[in-house]
Length: 248
Length: 354
Image (tube, rainbow over all chains, first blue to last red; front, side, top):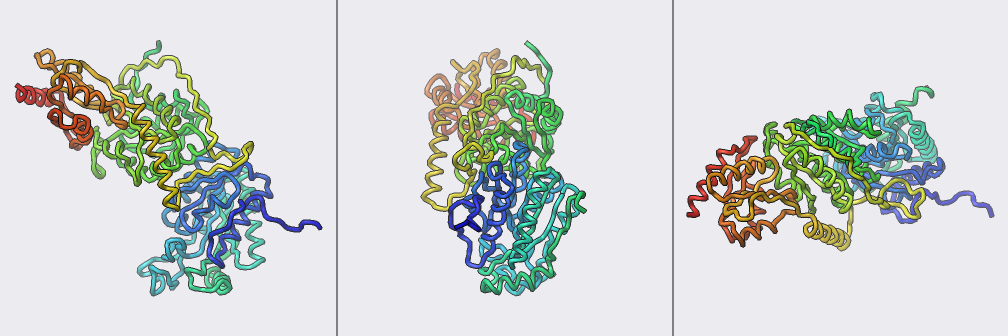
């Protein structure tokens, strides 16, 4: 019998610790498949965040570094500048990338670092107990916005892709979601493209992935997928915000 | 042998190049600016990289990444910037990566000023960031010694897979002295099979990490670190003694203050007062042996002189262990101790001993 599909070599043989219905697992798999398909697994170094994906170094089947909260792009910069031929990616959540690590993200983009950042936006701090994230929607209830996020108190959701796309050193910036099979396939293409942009040395690449957090959203897994479509995508529209010039 | 006039901050840079360092990440801050200026010019000449980070926080994390990738890497800053780096240094210490951090200390606390100081002693030798960790800390007292100790710093960092800090005060960074460079030292960093360079040619993957969620596991990591620090304490204590053999008053001072103290030793000897100097070269591990030996020998009193409110003083007291009185003289806020002030203090002690 022919093998039609198999486990990607990009993932280690280890059970994910993620909650039921969380889409981190899908995103891990897409990143791992992309690295494997590009044939660069043996020269890839991943940098993982602090947050729900803090144990990602156990899951990606390549050399991995665990960074301090928000510092992954700086750590990735250090690796890439020492090993320019390597493929370096960061995997970061919204608190890590868009709050405590905003400076590192913006300046890695500004320097045009040849790294790829996978930005998982689920509009909430997951691991620490469902607090408000910079990307929490207006009106969204979290443990630190129990009456819903009010702009008068807690400001507005941060649109990272739109912001990073304004930076000259950013070569490819796109937002995808993994709430439907169609969107998952699109996300895979985007991740592949981001790594290709790195391999071509075109500059910084960022893929923002809208992800679910049923646990902290207080929704069932199917409801969470619907919530991405009905609540998140209207605020965080999908699509390319910056593409390499030769592809415009 | 080639003799050149060099500024202290530049000597840190040239010393690093001679030690085989080819990657430097930093953020501007006075009074260490000439160091990054020097390396921004010098590193490209030897195929290296100078990269200006967006903050000290980012700089130390670039160092973390570069060290994880197996490079000999350095950063430098001054007191407030070193405070910002403490998070990263703690991670680097736990992940057991080698790197060198230079602190050209300035007046504090807070924004303080840009005048010379030694007020970061506690921060440097007692850990600095969160958790139980230590850094070997070297304190050169001349431009020549900067060149020599930077090479040692990289060697110690590689030997122990640990960050090493080299501290100077603003005077040392800013002043110029003739230096004999000599032939470049033979640099042979040990192999780094643990480095995250990609798995190519390796059977298993490497992970650089400081997260151990199981307490049993993290305690094991801590015990391993402590065993390493024990070895550092056994093997790496360094100090200089100056006319200390028969001295009845021993001045203890490090860095530039030790230069001032030497002048005091000479002038006091001329005046018939038997004074000597013990200068710690490593602040951690602290050279307690010569102090303990003096305390049980000819010394009748100790005088610790620092450009702070009495930080190394605590380590001297631990070494002397109550056997002889330990006096202190210090200036703070960027004020530099004068020879006359220390002489006055020595005379007071000497009168009290009579």
